Amino acid sequence: MDKSTDLITLPIKIKSLNEMYRAHWAVKKRLKQEYALLIRNQMNLNKIKKISEPEKVSLYILSFRNRKIDYDNLVGGCKHLVDALCDEGFLYDDSPKYITKFIVEQMKSKTEYTLIKRIA
Image (cartoon, rainbow, N blue to C red; front, side, top):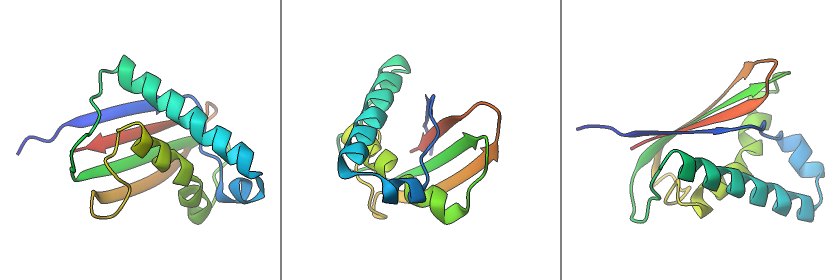
């Protein structure tokens, strides 16, 4: 079975769960919209097709950050990003039924950005 891999690079870091808890609902909504716009642009640029039918995929998110945060904070902060990935068709749905593997990691870096890889 041939696996296809799609890669998106976002020029922003993922906000931590602590930051998201303290944010007003309108700020969270704008952040999700910002994620969606960046994802849409990257999908168009890289000619990544939307998933329109149920499909099982693996999702790998790698956050490059100035300062590392604890794992729970990182994964919890990915919620709005994963929702935006679903809204834009990069993922069919965010339930465990469709995401077979979900890996979130971080690396220390002077430049902050996020890599997202979908493996079908």
